Image (cartoon, rainbow, N blue to C red):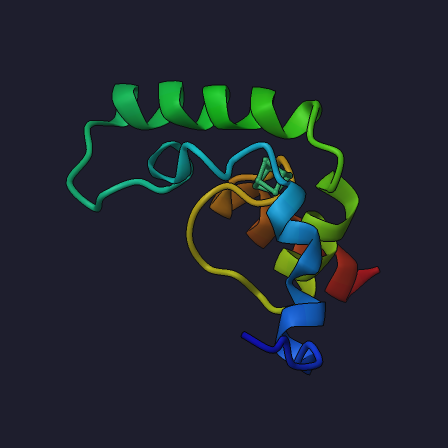
Length: 91
Ligand code: SF4
C-alpha cells in the first residue's frame, strides 16, 4: 500500500489526534433531552480532561473560528463559547 500526501483537511485536523477526548467522545456532547444535572456533570468531567489536554489551544481556536455549535471544545461549553464570541464582537 502506498501512502498519499496528506490533504489540507488532514492537516487542519492533525491536532485532534492528540486530544484527551479521543476515547470518550460521548462525554463531550449532550442529547437534547438530557437532564440538566447529568449535562452539568458531563460538562464538568469533559472540562477537566480539557485542562490537561496538550492541544487545548488549537482546539479552542478551532471551535471559536469555526463556530462549533455543540459540545465542549477547548475547555469551553457551548454557552461559554457563545458568551466569549459576544464579548469579542463588542470589544
Ligand atoms: S481540548 Fe478538550 S475537546 Fe479539545 S481536543 Fe482536548 S480534550 Fe478534546
